[in-house]
Image 1: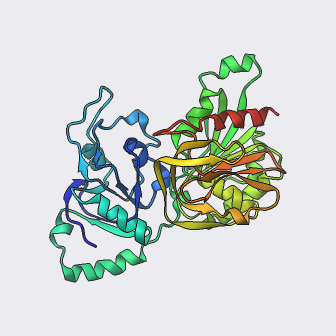
Image 2: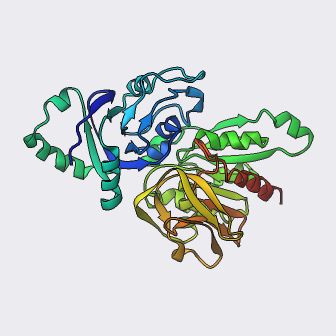
Image 3: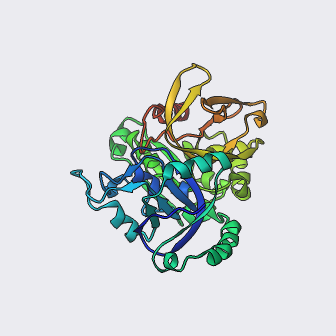
Amino acid sequence: MVFEGKSIGAQGKTIGETVFTTGMTGYLETLTDPSYFGQIVTQTFPLIGNYGVIPSDAESMQSWVRGYIVREICDLPNNFRCQKTLDEYLKEQNIVGICGIDTRALTKKLRESGVMNGMLLSGNEADAFSDEVLINYIEEIKQYKIRLAVESVSISKKDITNSNNLEKNKSNNKVKKVVLWDFGAKANIARELCKRGCEIITVPYDTSAKDIIDINPDGIMLSNGPGDPSDNTKIIQEIAKLCESNIPIFGICLGHQLLALARGATTSKLKYGHRGGNHPVKNLETGRVYITSQNHGYAVEAQSLPSFAKMSFMNVNDGTCEGVKYCDIPAFSVQFHPEACGGPKDTNFLFDDFIKLMEK
């Protein structure tokens, strides 16, 4: 299918895995979420950019998407915190985008046929477009694959973040030292830990289990991130070693998948994934349903979980595994994003559960 619209952002050509997200707000958080590395993102909500760009809300220092698709972009944002328009931000970040297309039709195609590769063309590239050119582009699009995902988004060296509450908590002997293993971590994971008075040592993706254990942390956070979890064989091996240390572990999104793989479970690719801020999950212990923020294209296969693990949360829409609790080690993980940016905050309490686990 070919959609014609109006160019936004940078001009040129880009290829990526085309996905859709159902969030009504939080577009800056989407653009700066490292989990979208290698993907062209389609916003299903028809009007995007109406409160502009607020840099302090970003989840990382740059945008990671390969391209951006919206129905209508607002060029006159209205918000007292706004510093620039969305179009200006896309140009700064060299993100090729398009607006004015039928995003509903595109989303229906992705739901029916599954996530697929796509290409955005603008400027001189679009002017030169023809049926003959399209034939050559189709092969180029087919060959695209997201590669070196985690390696591309992780930090390069260890970083230490101290909470504003650290000195106060030191006097109460409540300081918790947490290693945040960065596979593409959203900034709000560290912010939530800081709110709870933790000292955070963020380490790169290629850190060894021994180096993490030598830090002597109270807990280990396995972050979110992009790509196929099964590609990260070395990381999975190191997580398996960490599981023998008896240090409390909390995994989010990719971290949830990697922990499951390290414990012997398997993962598989979803037809079109879960992306947006309105995904219902059910706590299987209490029966309560929470609305969650999600961004993933792979899932842990519930039937593959070992006997010492049990599914703790289930996706209400399709029954997929949304959380795992491990009975033999102090560890749990969730597929959704409890740091809740851009919302909702229903499952924010899971960070408190992690603190309690470290205090046992």
